[in-house]
Amino acid sequence: MALVDYSSSDSADEADRRLPPTKRRKAAVGPATHPSAATPRATPAGISEASGPDASGSDANSSKPGADVSDMPPLPSEFHDLYASTVRQSVVDDPSLHHGRHRQIPHVVGNWPTHLYVEWHPTTAQHAVLADLINDIKVELGGEVQLHNFLTSELGSPLPLHISLSRPLSLSTADKDVFLEKITHTIRTSVVAPFTVSPSGLVWFKSPDSNRTFLVLRVISSPPATGEDVTETNPNPELMSLLTRCNATVTAFDQPALYQRSQKGPAGNAFHVSIGWTFDQPDDKTSLKMQQLFEQAKSGIESWEIDVAGIKAKIGNVVNHIALASLERDAIGSRLFES
Image (cartoon, rainbow, N blue to C red):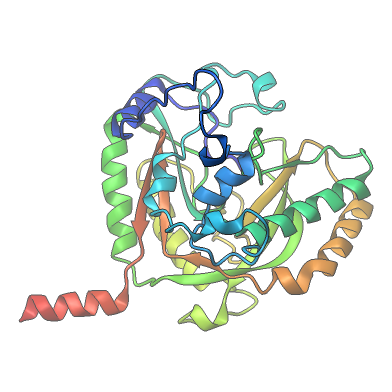
């Protein structure tokens, strides 16, 4: 699910102020004097390998030609937050710029589009599996359903995926800083330590906020990482705890809670990663074909672990990382303070 539809001019200005200055590279005039010593031309694939989460060299595809780029030191996690903003193409609702999509929240000058979520950067191998799965589903659909994916940008570079912990929100300028302070405090003072979740199934999900249907990977808490019992009624104890805190904060700012529109409480099995979307409504036959394709790749996908070390609070074009509390670190800090 795309994180930002459009941003306010105020948020774009603030993002520009926070970004480090960049140097303009001079264009080469004429042919290179020493072609053999020239820097290799950066291709979209090369760029993604250099800047992606697999830059540490741990990728399963590191033995492939050109994978020596992955020997570079890993980029700091803050890099993805600094350059996560999208280019604003229009301040008006223009569906022609976004495959027919409409704004979920109308653009209002002085308001800041906001979203709370867990970010996931699939490895190159995981990205390839998901891309193949979506392509196979498209073949089975046979053009009856037009399926778009969230895996790559229009230029073909890999995109991060996410697990939502809020609906699309809209904060006023007066509220945005206070909101960030509140949500940061409530997450960092939680008893939730870093944990992992794993994909558990592939389903269609009809959005209650738009006319789109999403192709989603449901996730469940990984048993080795959880401190609570994972059950059918509570398959995501850590995410549920974080969601409860996020909902309490957003409702205090008169914003809508997630997974609480038509039921008394949030559902623990509703957490998911969106990998595609369509305006069409797939029928039962289409859903059955999709499930059969997922079953073929199930054993590999269900073994994946998505690390959750914190949540992202994106306000306008600025992404803030809120780290989960480390119980061991906090205990050490408490002992030092007491001494």
